[in-house]
Image 1 (cartoon, rainbow, N blue to C red):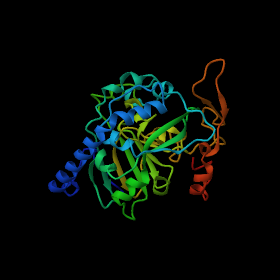
Image 2: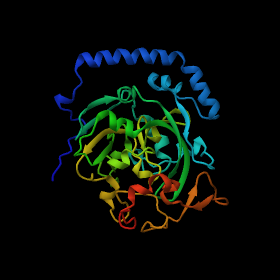
Image 3: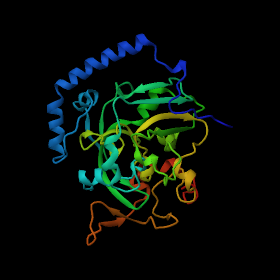
Image 4: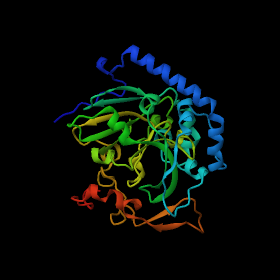
Length: 335
């Protein structure tokens, strides 16, 4: 069955929020933002105390206002040292800004993250173009300290701030026909210099996807912050996915569109090299990448003489929580 995925800017008249509802909601948000701004300084100071050395960064009022009710350390990677902020923000894959690990930190400031909207469409009861305030107006920020394992065999431990993806799914009410969630990254050549490169092999925009039961899993997170602060641009501001039991390329950054679809979406890396990057991309030390083993990983930070190499854990250490999602599957084939 052919499903047409319209352009990221497409929005039908039926998806537009009626003006009276929009204006009343906006007045409520503005009032809440002002109240949040009044307490913003001590809340940000508290975050700075929790993560000393993390530089201050401007944050939208809605984000600051939610820090007061945040559930700090709602999920913790037991026995793991948190990766220093400098490593987590200076060593990234975000090809929209360039192929080198330092390119995102060097160039991502060019991306304009305010205002930001997300188009929700497809097989869903409440399609529309939503601001981040609208998406999370009733949600509670949670801090989740997760392991992050890259398919390139390096890893980090990062304290994210965000909202369960399941909360958004329940809010927009997918129809029973929706079997997958498709996510799309912003494509702005004027602000994302990596997309202008003639050497880029990626067919922009970047696309990822999840099965609906994966999207609804309690560990699946929509992150809007890290280290007690708003997300830096190079880490996927202002909205990214974090799926801790999968390789990092599944955790799509700078999301502008979420579509609920009937068929498995055609994702970016799987389209480019299906023999190397499967749709599921579950961390599995028993299934090697065609060009390297996945049995071991290099935990950052490290050095030439102390590389900090360790064994990779099945499902990145989250097997107890997620293995049942794949009980009937052959993980050597459905990788």
